[in-house]
Image 1 (cartoon, rainbow, N blue to C red):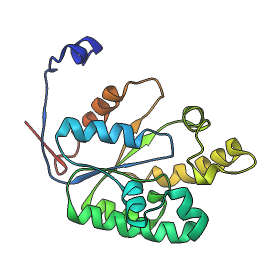
Image 2 (image 1 turned 180 degrees about the horizontal axis):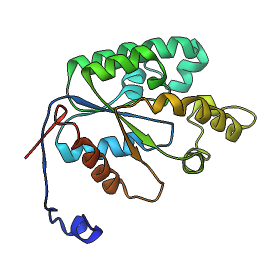
Image 3 (image 1 turned 135 degrees about the horizontal axis):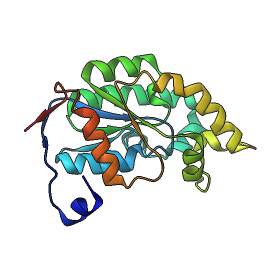
Image 4 (image 1 turned 120 degrees about the vertical axis):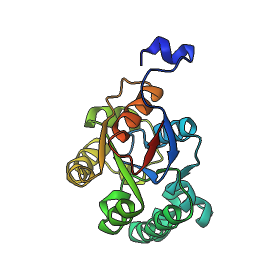
Length: 196
């Protein structure tokens, strides 16, 4: 679909997404666009948008950095597993997860069983440009956040590669273009999304 078609509201020829059969779970590094793309995708499909980090914060009545500082990362990861399992069980929609969520085998297994994982694959430069001016990432509160991000990236990419589908987030595409890319990838999964 061209940018002109998008902005004028015309629909492209081809399949149109219909009923959502399984939750779409956005996975990837911090800064990959999971929340922004997930929210826009949910709006396009007219389904609920769910955010595991937001649910954890609401349940704890604390921010994620506060949870990390008070209770540590292992406690946070335990709560994250519980919230992801609950959200996948309770409601069908688009679920954005924290950057570390897909690293846990238990999370990968429940996501595969109850939904479909989509890795928003962004390179290190794109991620660094998106997160370097924010102080909301507890894992980057180090003496050298760029090196920390690089290490996380190196360690996590092989696990993100286990996602059901991969969509490239190049840092240039508009959010609606990213939604188009996700929907295009989902055409290979009729068990997730009905097409009309």
